[in-house]
Image (tube, rainbow, N blue to C red):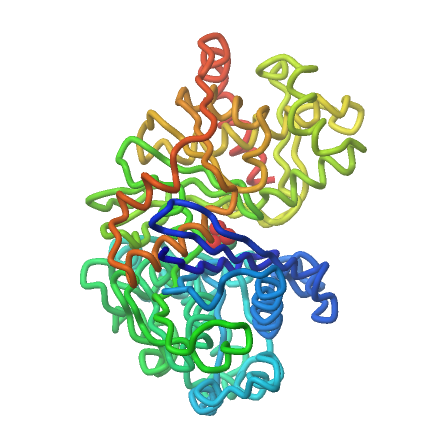
Amino acid sequence: MALYLGFDSSTQGLKAIVIDATQGKIVCTSAVNFGQDLPAFRCPGGVLENPDPLVKHADPLLWLAALDLVLQRLKEAGAPLSQVAGIGGSGQQHGSVYLNAQFLKIVAALNPALDLATQLAPALSRRTSPIWMDSSTGVECAELTRAVGSRLQVATGSPAIERFTGPQIRKFAKTEPESYSNTYRIHLVSSFLCSVLIGGDAPIDSGDGAGMNLLNLNTMQWDEEIAEATAPALLAKLPKLAATPCATGGLSPYFAKYGLPTGTPVATWTGDNPASLVGCGASRDDMAVVSLGTSDTFFAAINPYRVDPAGFGHVFGLPSGGFMCLTCFKNGSLARDRVRTEAGVDWNFFAVDAFEQTPVGNNRQWALPWFEPEITPLVTKAGLRANFDFAAATPAARIRAVVEAQAMTLRIHSLWIGDFKTLRVTGGASQSVGILQTLADVFHATVETIVTADSAALGAAMIAAHAVGGMSYETLAGAFCPPTQTLQPRAEAVRIYADCLSTFGEFKNACAIL
Ligand code: XUL
């Protein structure tokens, strides 16, 4: 038996999974929902309230409280934590944690009689963490673009992007220079939680590091010129880099209280999307992943790497080596849920019935659920956009209008990468046959699901089995990621979507500038 523990600290919660890597089995899982389970942190949906819709911060202490709670839950559920041979993890990408000079001393001497949040609170040089949903750094992005020019995209895989960590750091350094200068270390969500596990300073991997507008993908080092243009003395505040996740330290004695052996090797954490690509077993060139979570993301391995001419797609390192490309859509599951709630229907109706009651193509009635300012395409003025009377339509027509618009937007913004024979669909909404069939028809591709919708946590455990246990990614993917459900595109539906794709694209672009 070779047990590995994987975490995924995502936008709305923390998930944990224990796998038996030799048996190819998921042994147990546990989860904490930030809003429901830890209401005292006042982050419903994982975000602190802010009057400015462009500002999205979270409380980093919430992520620590969730780590304590999820481990407590695993222990209470009788998970065989004493037999865990290695630990991996992933975090929502781009979010950053700002730590002062006391951080290393505090994290190296954690007292098991106290909780993590209480002990690490004095180590924060900034009380809140900007997360990927934040779109408030337009000015800083323009400044970085002016200073670095097109080299920014060529070197880092992305042009200056509002939610990326570099522009966020620049805004912090400009608006709170004193707190910035008191910052000794800036971690990502992933490397912060990994640091806490190992009781030291963890590196950032190239999967998550590439989401900062600071990592040079050609040298796999921080880009000195870009770091200098971003904020004063930034280079010294950044952690070390690990090209791909490797065993990076032993588990802190703090975690023995949950039954985990002190010194258990911990692998470098990565971003949730790179981990999800591993957890979906999708490193083949003809396969892409659609992850339907808080954000919807489309990603695939891409070697050698090239950049999106339109600037919406990104290139990140891939934990299994090489590169992946990714396009992110901010209005994912929360938007679908809002449409469902406002239509007064349950999830089963949304997932299945709505598609049985409406025709494919929805008579060209489309609705873009941009309830939050969108990032692909760039939309700063939030609000649903429809080309029909949305409020007067039936619940089924509204749902199909949204799902088809989301699928066609995904398609349009992935055309720069190419065509794919197979899409692996993961995340909560992958349980909807209606959504899966729409994706198969819009992409003219076979759609597959895998055994767990929590592919990032599974991927994190697989990364640990590789980095610590030396197992090959092929073997792990063969054991954990066989397709459990396969849907084929339907010829007539494929034709309907292909016929309206460019008209839809014009509608979408016109809505984006409203
Ligand atoms: C990717 C992105 C989101 C977050 C949260 O660029 O911003 O997918 O990783 O899941």
